[in-house]
Image (tube, rainbow, N blue to C red; front, side, top):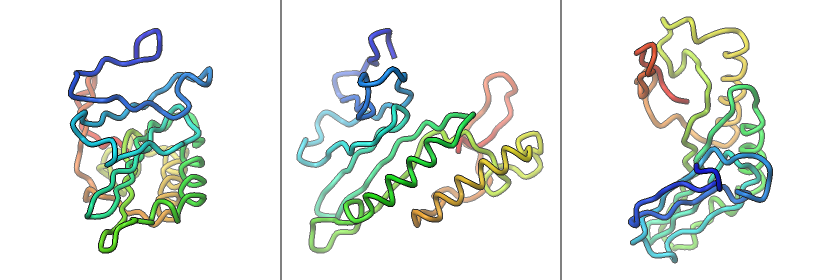
Length: 171
């Protein structure tokens, strides 16, 4: 983000900022890009009360896909709490397809800053402090309560740390 709170985007992309972007003192830490050639009738932004989350809903004859792009602070579970409240309060809207044969899906993605043996290498014990495990278990509970599943099989590394060169999984 630049000093004015915006990011550069190629003309083929539309940046979607958190719905409270620039309406609060908090710096936005999430942005989602939509292809500019995607019809504006095919998607809409969903209001979410955090500068760390963007939420959009894509729709088509196949149904709807709710994409919730998350940055979860390392120091707090506030975003996880807001995700749970949002999902509970909007469950009917998130699951209503508006099409006869379509289905509804919800995808939470982003950087959750949580490590757990369920998805990280269980031999990498430096990641599993007592507090880190408790924080990850609060995330697991929120995911389960929302009826979501982990999309990637366990223990597939997705991120190589710049300094340590160790692989982990951003979750």
